[in-house]
Amino acid sequence: MANPITIDPEIQFGTPVFSGTRVPIESLFMHLEVGISLDDFLKDFPSVAREQAIKVLEMASKALNSEKLLPLIYEIAD
Image (spheres, one colour):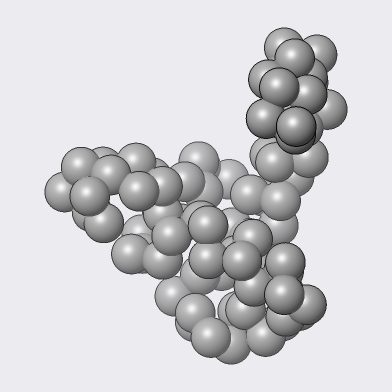
């Protein structure tokens, strides 16, 4: 799968969005944070493919477990 995230200053002022859409990546995490399921998120944003959402979640998991990012995570967790 190609990169599921696009960052383009011409789309949503450079906010990271799901590729091929104008849906901010942040919206997925906001939905999950308040207890809205992935299925319901996908119903709310039909332009986002399930595979894209899963890939973004996998990327976030890898980033959060990366030794390169751990110092930053600990810094912003305070």
